[in-house]
Image 1 (cartoon, helix red, strand yellow):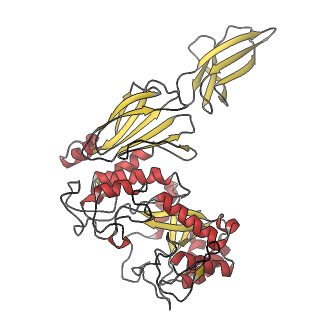
Image 2 (cartoon, rainbow, N blue to C red):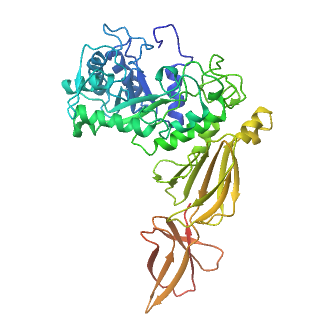
Image 3 (cartoon, helix red, strand yellow):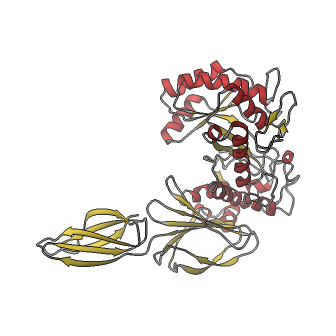
Length: 482
């Protein structure tokens, strides 16, 4: 549908359903609040999830309706009290169609953010202070109605000029903003998540507020008039840093705005900004052109996936960010971001409580590949690079190129297997590996053909397995399960 200003999306919802369901993607759907109705939204849910069986789990009521840039035909436009009142009706009718999905309400960080009018107030039950901001008034109205959303929607564009963080683009500022370079501004993910959780707790009460999750459904470095920074390697580094930082918070989703957008030449093209493209573009790709954010996202698929554990990695140097994850198959991944676009850094890598195999896989993307794109080098030189690294230990040195994402993937070191015969017909296999790593026990009669006997996940560094001894000669081995 259009947004009230005559714009019409270039694809139909039927085509969108086809793409999303065939990809197996978890889609977020935004229903029309500003010029739409709750009946219209409920009919959309019924069509998508009941008639067409799309199983879309996340639905948003409106988009950035706290901002005057959003079309709002209500008697009190861009008003949190009106929004919550109407959103409660949306929630009831939409849930009547499909009670299994989740509905989100638009929110902002900061109790005094987006004060559009002062017709209604909200009192923080913990501090006793009165606030007029969008989120407090909205939450207070939900509480009075006894109807609540399933999640709060958060958007962030740290260099959007109306935000107050920064009036112009800055590479150094952007590359530190995700991890609290600007304390007090709520511009980093941790501060934003903590503030929004505080508001849920203070205005709704702990038990009610704790049941509402937090979701990021839009992020990019800038919005509106984009310049060269947004299509440079700097924005690719920012994207990776944001994803890795966000995983340390309780935000449960991350959606980049957007996939495909279009060129802009109205933004900042100051010579102090790194980059060579003479245009900006919020998208990740256009035609056959892939921007650095495209390759950053491509690399991140190897960093962490569903079910993996985010670890507490750290760096003692501000321009080298370090993140790590334990994969479900026992592998360890480590992402290092060199945020300096002019200087290579030599660093010492220390792995604690993890013994890696001596050979690791390294995937990288940075200035070298982006320069290959500038000179129209073959596509292979523009893509994420993959190499083998033979110097992996618990403590090793590595040189990180300027403006580059470097992802290590370490496999656990090979296990040591010992056997003890226990008369009359049993023997004990003991293997020394790593805790919580899946290993496969295999046997063979000829050292050529191996049969998997069992899969064991170690609870400690040493595991004992008792088996009935075979009359025939058998060979045993334990291998890491990738």
